[in-house]
Image (tube, rainbow, N blue to C red):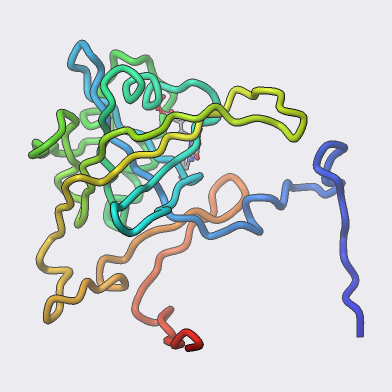
Length: 206
Ligand SMILES: Cc1cc2nc3c(=O)[nH]c(=O)nc-3n(C[C@H](O)[C@H](O)[C@H](O)COP(=O)(O)O)c2cc1C
């Protein structure tokens, strides 16, 4: 039996009442990125075009649609921190997405406490159960299939220092579900929270 597919070419529109793109590629982990400007102003913002791309060394990245303050700070300083966003920080994470001037400290705006990092200048979100201190490795401007540069920027960084709230460890194993990470779905407001009930196990083929 063949499925009935809705097919579309993104260049000419999806033909649906709501853009399905980020609802299909979802839920996506959130890159809650803290940076600091050369003038010392703290910045914090969520990016769901985010993921981990390599184990050793750990390399993670996010895409900024437009040259936003986070990218500008990282281009200037070469440093950022990734903070894990969990259900407890969901509202603060959302508040930190406000489009405000670069002079506004989004830690203060979102009512979040900051902790100093050990190896980089940007602070960490104190309430977050895991934070990665990162150095910029590549800043890549995205292009279309016709090699036309677009105003979207992929930031890749190496995690050089990793902080884990020890309450998330059970016999030394990090408990993803215990932290309760939140992930971004589609539409203007959909999120998922990952708990222990979402876990299933499957070994890779040998
Ligand atoms: C959950 C969530 C995910 C987001 N993901 C992205 C993203 O992947 N790329 C992007 O450019 N903006 C994204 N945004 C919007 C930015 O957070 C927003 O534009 C913010 O003001 C950027 O801050 P900055 O200028 O301080 O870097 C997202 C917002 C939310 C709430």
